Length: 472
Image (tube, rainbow, N blue to C red):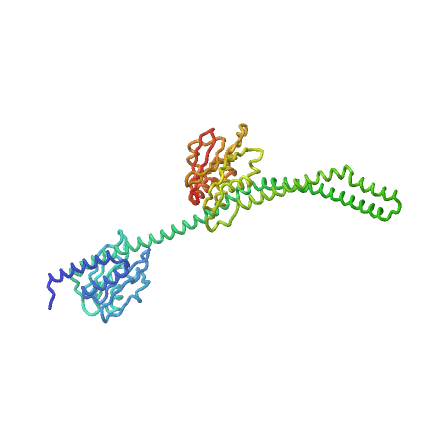
């Protein structure tokens, strides 16, 4: 039974609605394209429906989608990497946005000789082709062909092909956007990862810079007790020699006592032993040796404290996560490490409450923050040493928070400096004196460990940094 024009029009409208809905609902665009080619191919009684895409410079085209009716051999595998220059007539028509409605391939003129030869070699009798455009750019083309009969493509066929062209163009635009978004996300993820690595390296480098700045001072701090120990060791060595000589003499006289047969001889040798044991020099050694041992012990403990402070300050055992951190102990060890920069130059006042709760954080990072702030305060005193430079450090518990306040009576900061003090690479130090990363890293580390850092400052009135952390 022959389909009426009205029925065909209704079928066309239904097909357009279903195809359009398919592209709205489907998640995988390629599935929608394949199904649409089949639906339209059947509607238009085509032998083959296909889609070609150009590469980015339009030099090569590839058959990327294809549907074939029963009995028609697929051509998609044979139509890859085709040079666009082979078909100048086709490309010209597409670039002008024209529809190629070729009722009979054999009627093509000499201007389309290459296209005619190509189509006839594949037994194609008729062709209907429309361009695919995205934002005015020629992306490729969609077409139908017939190998069994000459095609008389109706207005409905052209209409549905135009709809398909628009849908495919939108689909490809969507695919491009999704691909670009995916690539952007991957690039951003890679950038974030690289930034994390760079930040970790900068933290390490800044820590090494800080340690490098105080290494000479720490070496001096260690050398002082070591020199004292070595000096006392020399004295102890002399005392020991004196004791041993005395013991040898006592032993000699004791032997003579035992071998003596007269009372006078025994008395004489016992007197010599008594004189040796009661000599002023030996009495002095007895009194002094105890003080020397105490001094050596003090020196050894001082060296141990400095070494422990360095080890605690640069502790790496918490790099994989957080651990329970005693901020009071962290302050003491940081001050030990910074001792050479402070001693004789800056007075440090500690106001530390008893039984301060511990913090769940990466302790080595908080030590880095404390050192950066203290070193910045020391630097702020340069040129202002005439008014008793003082750093006050106070730790207190307020509710569910631990607050560490580091305050100096230095030169303070103006509004612009205070606003930018946490910006990366911002510094007011002379070239070669600072990287401009210390306070930026300090701010980042405090936030990464769940805290916040606050600044209060005024020119000529010093600065106050408050580190606020939640209780463990």
